[in-house]
Length: 251
Ligand code: NAD
Image 1 (tube, protein in one colour):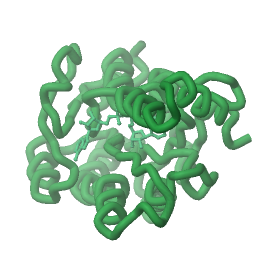
Image 2: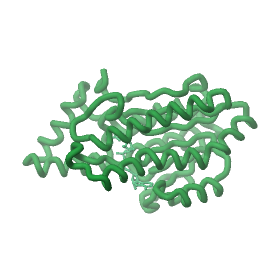
Image 3: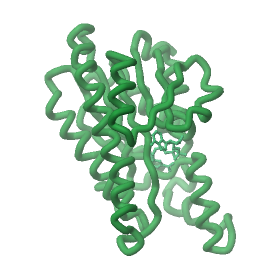
Image 4: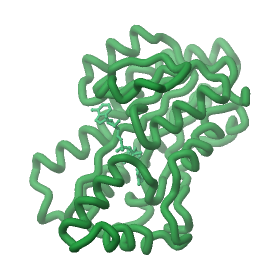
């Protein structure tokens, strides 16, 4: 405990799954955590975090929220959505939505918070940290039926590296985390849904687990552990990386 003491963090999509686990881990490590989600009711029960509604699809809302919160040390972009299907199942609207939520939302929050993060780094002499949730399904690896998802998560790696490069000497680090399959509420829904088309949830579950060489899916806390590391001063020399946490999926 105490690895993030004195740091101020903003986490998007902290209502459930990976975002929530990150918010909880940051609180445990002593950070002041602003936990946000488009669905504020999901934030209930998140102890010792400041809670706020934030829809990352809205530039206006993101700008207003950043103006309200002020300078921060850590920005974690978690909001994302999984489109299921190949290019043939992805019309323009589906493509645009995936890129809006998975990639452009990070552009919005980074633009809004980066000026304050630069100031904060100059004031404290410590680096500030942006962490973007990408996926193994990205430029790292093709996964079946993850056409728009994989393309948008590859964009996340690209924007992560660009930001890291442009601010490498000015105290702002930027890294991406690339999870394999992780248990979360939306993942449970994907299993249910695939199960309906395969004649049983167990069969769908088998398929997801079969993708994982370790023979199990990950837990959100296992992703949060890397986020804690990347957020803090231990990672002061780490920027521009895309790090898989995937039970051997990309090995
Ligand atoms: P999840 O999908 O279960 O929860 C997503 C959260 O995002 C919800 O609380 C929802 O209310 C919020 N959200 C949706 N739209 C939003 C918006 N416009 N503004 C703000 N918040 C919004 O969580 P998860 O499965 O842990 O996924 C979190 C992130 O991790 C996503 O970016 C996802 O692509 C990525 N990821 C997940 C897995 C996995 O297997 N679960 C694997 C790789 C990457």
